Length: 450
Ligand code: FAD
Image (cartoon, rainbow, N blue to C red; front, side, top):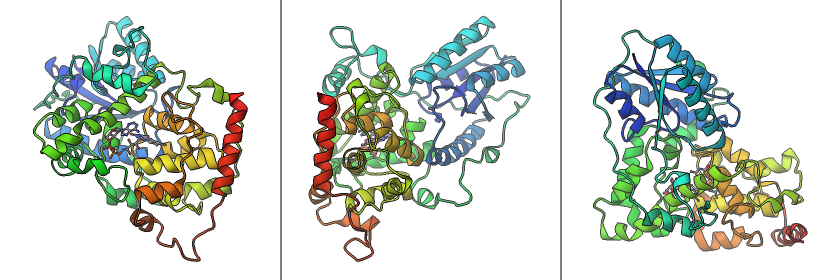
């Protein structure tokens, strides 16, 4: 009887423990991906992520086919579809790599139970985080709330395992299993086609993810000390591939412990600690009520957010606030599906603190427009900026976008790249006075402190 492998955030053949286990079982493997927009607590993908998914699945399907396998695509409730496929194929085993979101875990726990009740063997694997959230605890046996001791506990524990090889052959069942056509999912934009900038900037899929890691380790990491300067491209750009699991953190960790130049070696710890922030936000999300909707610091529930009109919000969304660094970032995001980390912080802070807009509004926009939109990293970072999150920037630390530009984009290269009309009559006046809105924000914050 075949084995069903249910793929989710792990669209890769290498270092995929569930795939390897399925192949090792010796029976044909049904490799299944389910587009799930219906399971409660499993967040439907945003627009930019759908674009990425389309291309990533195309590449994965090709890679599988070259190894004798076949990718089966279905749409609906993941749990429901898995049961359906088990019934249709007579599969005796279902395997998957664990996901860590609240809704995802609840669905998987339910699935495991119901499969076992039907006499089907179900097994899950550790694949997508270096350190599973429940394995890292404070001395008092509690989850961590602060990054530095969290990461110290991680790196001082047993080292992450070595990455696993990709299987050479993935045997498909003799009778083909019914699959949707990817094009019928309509994941790509048509009218208007806003994906031109995404196509110019990205090649989704496992192969390019591995290429980016290799290029970063050999050529770029040495300059990672300049990572806060948005005009330089010295970060890894691995975030969308990590979000879709085209590459695993184990592969990254392992590559960082292979040969590196001396200068790169000096930057390695800093880079790995950024990967550590990804682990931290997943750790926090695992223990939080619902990171995307609920303030980690409940005091913020009483914050007096403004309710902006669409016109005002659109100025932020499309980069017409009149604040050059914010506009540059928002245009980079809209055009490429990505924004430099420093500028994400500045653009988010401007929305939450200068415009007093609820962080959830910005989080949703990023969710829809980022190719690396991640269920833990996106709300975790928005809550960090807002001051409502774990180990967050204190609310009163309000980024001044002009000072940030002077410091990190000194010669204005990044701003001019995205806002060529800056300094001309075509560029709008600032939509708010930075100094006054800062004072207003601090006053609003005083209200919830009392
Ligand atoms: P590198 O500097 O090369 O870092 C390597 C990896 O470390 C990244 O790919 C990422 O997985 C992880 N990482 C780096 N910085 C962070 C961070 N601050 N928090 C968590 N993980 C980090 N990152 C996402 O992956 N998805 C999101 O949806 C997301 N939303 C964000 C929203 C806001 C408001 C802010 C301020 C940051 C957000 N980030 C998010 C974090 C960060 O901006 C990106 O991970 C980073 O810019 C990706 O580029 P890179 O891969 O070149 O990073």
